[in-house]
Image (tube, rainbow, N blue to C red; front, side, top):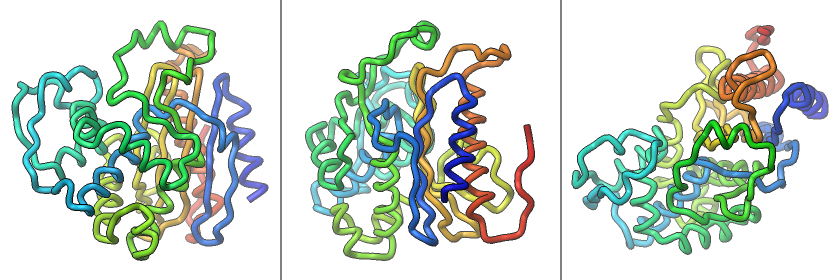
Length: 296
């Protein structure tokens, strides 16, 4: 893991923006990180905790996956996702609301689910699974002037944001994975193994594929959740090799410039950087004999 840590850190040191990450090798149990316990803007990676808090409420009988949920105009206030463009007042079962919250990061769904649960319940869930650096402060963050925020030199005011740490989200993903086959791990989440398997399925249906999965070879799959803020581009997931869980990787970038020194957009550089970190982990931890990535 030290050689892998050195390679990952070298890739991060070469960037003109901040990167924190957490890795767990699921075969050996070894972990490594860069600023893994540093509090950062969670952006939409926080929705993994919201998903599990909702499934905990389902397991307790307070909610039902089949109950109808009305999507209202008051929640169509964000540019993230698809339902911002729909006429308000349409109805979906809760299961489908949770799916859309994750796989296209739909914030109409996020605001709806958080209102059903309450922010206090989401924060209580996070504390219960020892997400020590995680705080949910807003149901849906307000839209911002992205270009202006990315050009700003001052560090973000984390006291007003939804925050987490790379290690917090990595440990939550590991607990979900364990919960799919271990009733005790599922119980720590307040869920059943069946609900943990549903959560893993939903994370595996992710449609936003330009970060962790970007440079992985055919046959590799990732159950993950992205997060995007004005100057943050994040992704957190479980990487599978031939259907077998190989490693967990969470990556959080910060203070990404609008334009990189080479003239390219910062958002593209951050996404490729996350993809390169993931491929570096893959090449170090994979069990097959496929060639390593040697791209630019």
